[in-house]
Length: 473
Image (cartoon, rainbow, N blue to C red; front, side, top):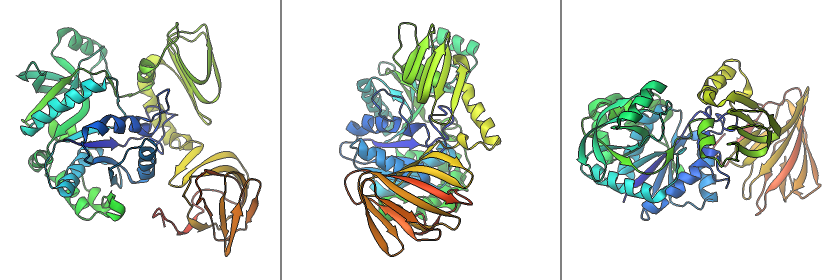
């Protein structure tokens, strides 16, 4: 048996504007079937656990996304480790190893996977996992290598060392190599003996903890304290904020894999992508006869080799050649295909200019559902609220605005001070400034409300939560 540990973090910059800080890449779909990258990863590892648990490490603000998407995909037996803030992969994996060692009491190999990878041959994936588990049982720290399909400049590389079992494509690692330029990547591809570093790992918890003791004692000490002081209500491990913040922010490659001597790799035969930019999405997509990948509200004329995707307005491309054009309801990016990696830099520029679109879109997800900003102007804002079955908003009040609700779908209840008002299509409820209120949906169908806010200020921070089932008070 292996114990999957799925890392579901990220800043949402590489696939902007589809992904944002509030909705990082693991939680969005790049698939025609609508499955998110997290759901695909959880489904991929499900046959490997033999009835045991899987773990997801994510930011504390994304726990409801993980649980909701797992439930929608029919994934059960999921355990969550919540980071109060991102401290890179070394601290995340160290904390997971400590939790697993504590929870399970055994020492089965951990299979560590980023949640945003695409793997297209799952039989070969299972074979590689089995091979890596055998090495992990021999106390190796194992990484998964992938045969390079082209001279990629967006991936790190491994130089393969002495074979452990050449027939099984198990090798020691001669060295880790940072992302090369195009010329060096071409040399690697031509010479052989090099492979892409996939960022997936396998090791026994005790062996990894021993490696942290030797190479990164500060990370281990901080993570031990964060786990020891964690809030575990509801079976979810919420790492202690002050303790976890003491962990140095460094990747597992730099922290452990490049320093340890008991490191090995399995060269896997499956097709793999980390979906690291829009060019990777284009590579994975279906193309028309001119090499265009079109999805959503998109059309092209006399264009080739381009990715055109819209979740908002119609995009019409004329004479495009090797271009990216992606739109949501509130943002558009257009770039040459060979500048796909620079989307990250563009988003950082937006952040430095305090552009709200850098971090969130018009649809904002909450534990109870979501809201979409329909229109905003001086002294007012209009939203559409979607309240999931069985969910309810916090009991709250506002100091600077009143609200007016109109039910447009489903049924539920509006709480207003001492009143509890039944909602159905067409029912309207006014919430005066300062009134204590909430929406509730005890039913089995989604409740949808149009909300009109009127006041001197309509920002999200004008919410005083008095009671909340999601622990946000």
